[in-house]
Amino acid sequence: MNPLQLIFLLFLAQVICYVLLDKFNFAKWKYLISALLIIGYIFIIPSRFFPDNPRHEPMCGMPMVAITFVFWFLGCGAVMITHICYLLIKKIITDRQKYGT
Image 1 (cartoon, rainbow, N blue to C red):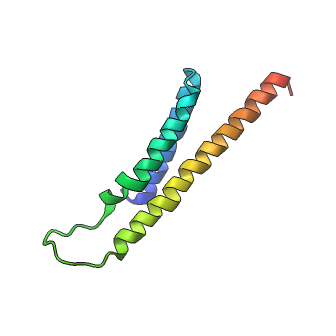
Image 2: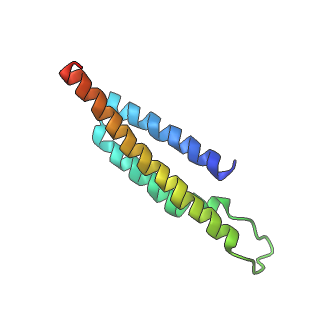
Image 3: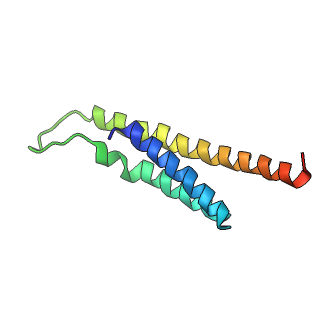
């Protein structure tokens, strides 16, 4: 699995969690889900994709930097954009239902 596939799968998981949390009236927990995903993208997930070094030789760190930046920018950015868009869409839908337009 490459990093973009994982980012997409976590995006789908985030949206499904948000829908379920709204369905069961745990709306405030969406912030916890987004915080956990951001912490995962910053600290946990990038290290899973680093190249192996079985002989423990010195090697260039550029692939590790690139992988880390992909998760930091695309992953954390996707979490924040998804969170903001979901909240805005949910607010628009509830306002339309509330005012009957």
